[in-house]
Amino acid sequence: MPMIDISFDTYKHLTLLRAREEVTYDDVIRGLLKLPTTLPEVQRAPEKKAWSFKSITLPHGTELRANYKGKTYEAGVVDGVWMQNGQPQTSPSAAANAITGNSVNGWTFWEAKLPDQHRWRALASLR
Image 1 (tube, helix red, strand yellow):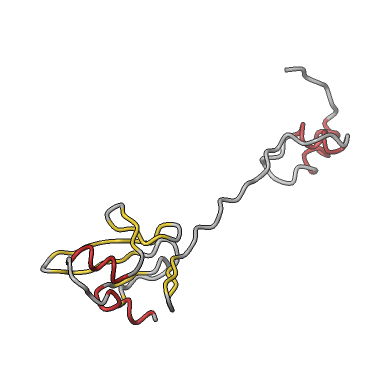
Image 2: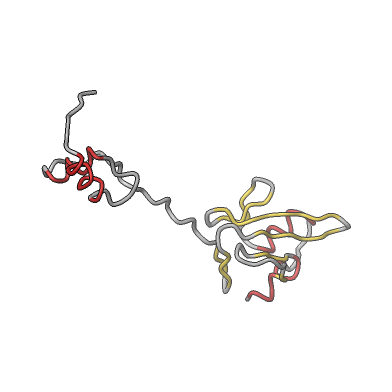
């Protein structure tokens, strides 16, 4: 890589022009010369979708659980989809039916823990 000699005074001024640590001296000089910078564009990760059904919306990352015949079953909201054992579910009742094999009111069957909360709540209480 080629090197150039600069005075200490020039070095201090270039240092002051660095907005943050990631900005190199080359980036500062390229900016002064109106050349394109070499910094990669910062890309935001797309926001994950919430799951919605009838009157309820559960954000991505919501945990779901149900107790049935002494066993705890788990599910969760993953990018807008209610996922249970690797399978998408269309409604709380369909998810409950996948466990029980019977028609069940899924709103009373499931509990939910929202990503920003620490306690479980009955799914029906979120309506």
